[in-house]
Image (cartoon, rainbow, N blue to C red; front, side, top):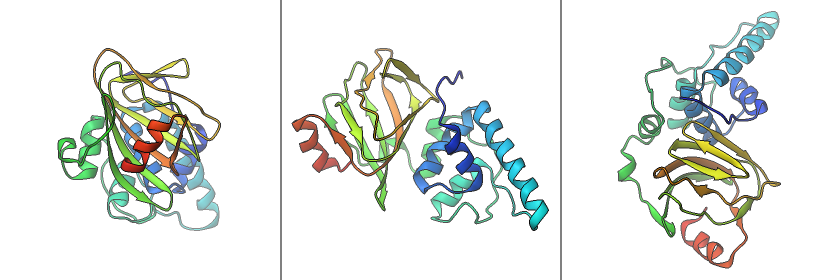
Length: 215
């Protein structure tokens, strides 16, 4: 799998330090299962942090991406000390299905517009974790954000801000990002996203739909 778009290095450093929210940890953990480049960055950050801790106090056990996933499922922090081997889950859809403990088809999908379905996975303290499923050629509503947004492509691809995002890619957006993703024509698209606060849609109809699906 060829990964072209990665999360900002700051996200990876915070991941290594265990300083991220539940949803952001989940998105980055899924990305790390398929991105060797970002795994290497996290490993370097963990190694550097371990050296600093070794000079001051006994180091806490390091957690893999799979450790963080399990901790998130249990509602625990990244320092909970759970153990799970890296690399058991080899595809992104399988990763998310394992976290959900059910099939994607078993979710409460809601209509989000022509060719578009959404499923809310979690919402707490202003953070929303959700899945998006769209048919080929679907044009999503134009929007910006009230905070950070990380979107991981689990299947298919979409066009946004003059870039193509394909399976494994992460689009890193924030309050200054105004975009209108368009699903590529090669097949359906499935994305996992985490947002800080509700999206800010430009059009009236999307804002009305937003009240129903609460994204």
